[in-house]
Image: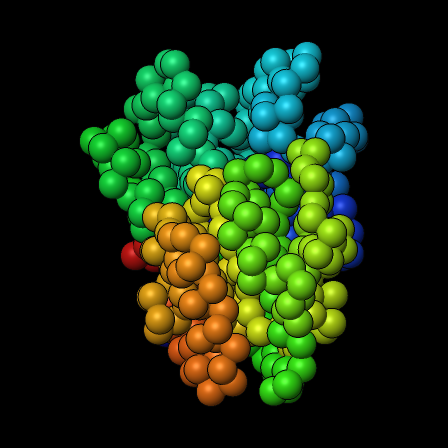
Length: 380
């Protein structure tokens, strides 16, 4: 007779969540929460900005907290406020810490463990011993450079069992150096919506080569994109289509086709099938960019700058292309505009990501196993 483990009561905390199914912001959090809610070994409560959720998810935020979180999302999120300056750069983080401290204490009697997204959201965890799984993205690594931050986070880890989960292996070494004596460090990749794996590409030889850039528009995220691409796109048959929110004031060259933010459905149905590939020349501290994973699942070749996050994700000339200067970018464009090479690289990327990453249900299973480990119920 198989004995099912008792459902764990899980509180997940996130300051990012899409307002509806057409919202591009924080879509990965909706996919993750929905996948966890589909599991019968978990009972999920979610403290996050308001949005459409799986019917099994219990909302943990009060009406006032939901309104505050909605306003935070509309302002661009906590990371954007920290970058943009002004009074809210100081007031918003302190307000967030106060609200999190209250929600952690309020929900403690009905919670077996916490799933905290992003390191800063773990700071107000009370010292009552309940275990915590803390996810880490690339931007979290910048947080560790702030004065006193390492000490404050280490204090959080001393009061409970903790597993810290970066979503990319390149973060393992610095996180182990900082927290390895107090917490388990375990890389857990996010999942991918199955629709991306099912996408069929239909670009035709002889069509104008359409290359895509999907990114928040900041100086670090865009990097040297315009300078490197200009000799290869301006006054040529190639087209560069740029998608994403303008989060810093950038001057866009006239030869760039800028479309603003795009929903996943628009990318899946209108753009990815007929594109030659995806370009990212980011200088930003990335984890494993979700749009790159989705492009790989769709069989779309990627040309990327040499960052630890990109080198962690792409095998040069096998599942993607890494470049370090404009000449290398030009060589990558010419090579990947050969139909046979394009299809070979795209197919290899899809196989790799299917085997190494899988779906959001695969991701939820990885987290569930760690929850059981944290609570000592993995042998039930």
